[in-house]
Image 1 (cartoon, rainbow, N blue to C red):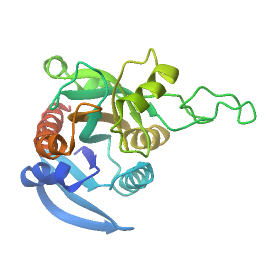
Image 2: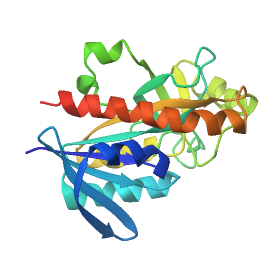
Image 3: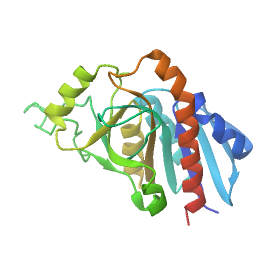
Length: 231
């Protein structure tokens, strides 16, 4: 029986999944809780990483080392950057990268902005898990990750226009590139899925509070659909 891991950052992003997955075991590993169960004849491991790149990377590594998933799905909410996005739009990050990595100095090796030495600049999701029906329901694009909650379109657009002008940046978050990097290094397939909870520069706290739970539930529905379609 195959194993699929699902990592989210916050409790609200896990709530619906835990009501549907038949959780039979719980493991505490270095302050990380892993909920193990089955769904549609597949072993499922759920984890809440906490917010930020280090938390996300640690949870991903612990999941791979202890549960050996064949696929890791990182799901949750994100701030929308593209001007045509609306709250509750679904984004599949066909590639993800860092918005706050800068090794462009000649002393550091003059790497393109966002690239870490020895790593690709972008990590590409395994799109084979997104079938034609799903592709009609989602938008594909780049998600950039940094340790900042982004709420200023002006600040974000300066980074995107300068460093990612042709990369179809759709959304910003605080975890996905770290999860992708660890999965890439370990040879584990990954998918990055985000539902827009707020649009950068157009939303306020009320919008975020209103849409974040709805977005989390919508993201969970797509995760379950993907699990149902994994061969």
